[in-house]
Length: 476
Image 1 (cartoon, rainbow, N blue to C red):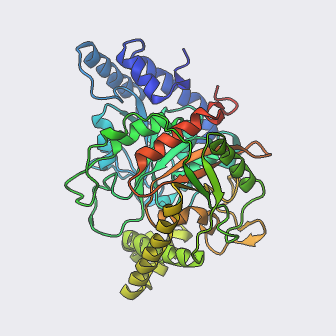
Image 2 (image 1 turned 180 degrees about the vertical axis):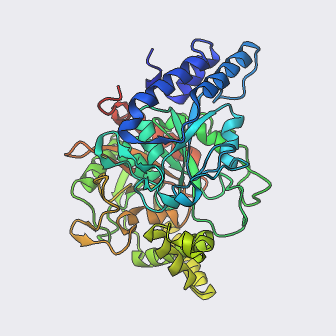
Image 3 (image 1 turned 30 degrees about the vertical axis):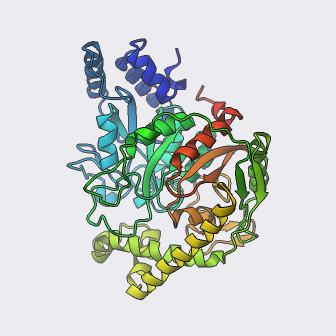
C-alpha cells in the first residue's frame, strides 16, 4: 500500500480500523520526506525521528486500548512556520527568530493536536509571511514540485509544495493576501480561506482589531479540507468575535445539486487587472464544468472602481504590518535584518493618521455594499487565483505582468484583494495546467458564513474533474 498517495480521511479510516498502524504511517512519512524534501525544501525544522516514532507507537497503544484522540489520531502534520508551536522552533522566516521556541501553541495548532495530529515539523514561508514566494534567509527557497525551477507560491508555499509532493496528507495555512490561494493554484491542490471569525486568531494582544488575515485548511481533496476545517473552526471565548459553533457542521460534506445555481465570472475585473497569457482562458474553461452541471454562468462586472479597493487594502495592510513589526524596525540592529518589503510596509504604516485608517475602512464598507449587490444576483462569484503562472524561484517577485509594470512587491497578486479585504469565504480549486505544464486555479467565492455550501459546490466540481488525481513527476 502506498500510504503517501492517501488523503487524510483515508489514512484516518485505515488507522482507526487497525489496518495500518500509526508507526507505519510515520515511518513512511519520514522516509518520503528524507527522499523527496531536498528537491523542494518544503518541510523545515523536522523533529527527531526517534521521538516521532515513539509518539506514533504511543498512538497505536492508545488505539489498542480503545482510545482515540480524534480523527487526526496519529497522522503526521507539519505546521506553517508563522504559527507558534509549543516546544518547536518558530522562525517566521526571520533570522531574528531563528532560535525562538514558543511556550504555547497557536489556537488552531492546539486544536489539531487535540484531534490527534502528530506535529513533525514546520512548513516554509517567506519572512513574516510577506509576499507570495516562500524564500527566507533562514531556510532558503521552497520549490514547486511540478517544476523545481519555479516558485511554490506563498506565504503557505511550504505547505502547498509538501501536499503536492505527498509529503503530508493535510496542512494548515494562513492568508492575509492570497497566502492560501496562490499556493493552491501553483501546486494543484485545494484550500479554504474561511469567513473572518471562523478560526480564532490566538494568542493575540488585540482580539478586537480589524483583522485582515485568517488561518485555514489545505489538502488534496475538498473532503480533507472540510475535515480539517471542522477541527480549526469554532468559538473561543478568548476571542469574542469568533463565530458560534464547534466546527462539527463542516466535518462531512456531500456534493450539492448544482443545477440552477448562478455563478458570476469576474475575470479581469472589467479590464482592470493584467494576466499572464493563458490564465483567463484556463479559468474560463474550468467554468464550463459548472455549466455542464447545470449552473448558470455569466460574465459579471464589479460595478466599483477597483483602484479604491487597492488603496483601502494597502492602507489597512500598512497599518497592521507596522503595528506588528514596528518594535523590530525601531532597533537599528534588528532593522538591518528585515527584508526590504517589511521595512517598506512599516515605514508607510508609520506615516498613517487615524483619519487615513478610518477612510480606508469606510472604503472597505463601500466595497462590501458593491459585493452584496453582486450576491443579490449571483450565488457564487469566481476569480482566478493568481495573475501569473509559477515564476522562476530565483526571483523575489514579478516586476511586470503582461507588460504592465508592478509598482509594489505584491501588486502582481492583486486579484486576491477583493476577497481579502472583506474576509469572505473562498475555496481555491484547480483549473488545470497551462501550456508549460504548470498548474493554475480559481477562487470560488461565497457570501459570508456560507462555507458549508461553498464546500459542497467544490465537492461537486471535484467529482466532475480529474485535476486532483494528477501527481508531479517523482511524487508517484
